[in-house]
Length: 266
Image (cartoon, rainbow, N blue to C red; front, side):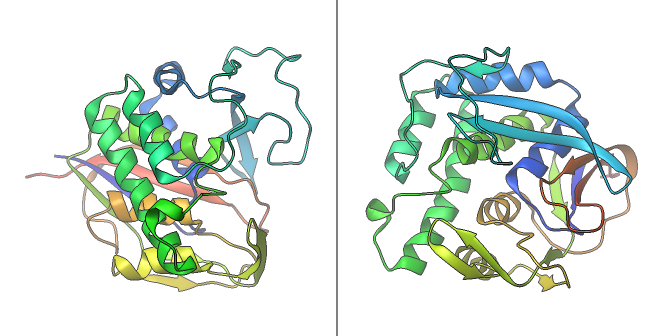
């Protein structure tokens, strides 16, 4: 029986998930080719190996029409790139609602299992945002979740999971940070309300550690609560491969999601 175990010592986010799963799969081209089926444009993807306080892992950076995660400006019309999607079709739509996101997924030529998993993850975030803001699902226009980078994170995760096809998925207890972050709704204390709502709705074990930033994003929370059937210590397995997904923040220690791929005797 094929098993994935997500070890989340410094939380989980979409880019970290994809980085770790790409190392398990070992086929970046397959991932990029599948993403093209979404027909979402105006972005490019940088996949790189990065060091996080002595640990090497894979980092995914989605560069969208202007600024990347580091605040650097990019003009995608001037800087052509092999992984670039550069047509005007779904260009510059930063605030999509759930119906619009689902339509993009449904209109794609992705596998049906991939579509279902991606929509299940999006629904979890939508339901949490709906409750937090006191609005109906149809009224929720996502800032983070409807943006291109979150679509890539969630659909990309679904693509990789559907390709790896584990029989079971487990996770460690989630470590979350503390303090205050700035997001689309202004300043919020950590954990942010949408993350808390997702964790509460799924009876997830988590704890805060002494790191002054967000470690579990709403997207990360939605991904792991959709995938994992339980949260705790790693089950006994024959380990075949380990993937390290490096986060974008320097938190003073290795900021890595570790995903173990192994086999359990039935």
